[in-house]
Length: 109
Image 1 (tube, rainbow, N blue to C red):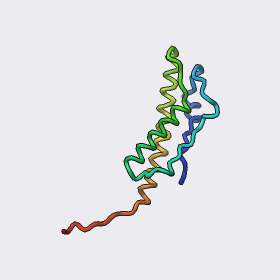
Image 2: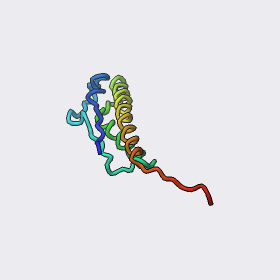
Image 3: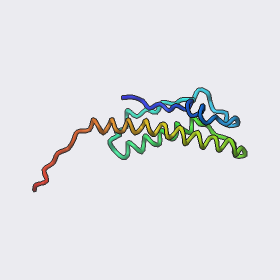
Image 4: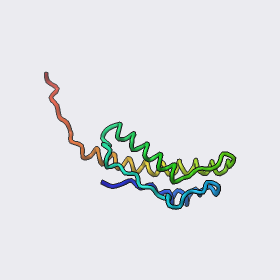
């Protein structure tokens, strides 16, 4: 199964990283594994969403409290990066649902 890739480099190119945030260049992209999750369940989807959010925070960095412009840049990076990752997650979830068997049950007593 494919791993979701969060392409923060693309978001950074579009939005720009705040200078004061000093993101770790090694974390320009983070793979979010989901093979261990059952994406056919609500719990699996929520777990994936939490993993994506942690990765988004890691790749977008943080800005100090006194740097309003930096904080705004980080917020925008997080919005853009999460939207991109969520689109990829929806594809993975749809794929999991596609492989799910259709349960046919009698409606008679």
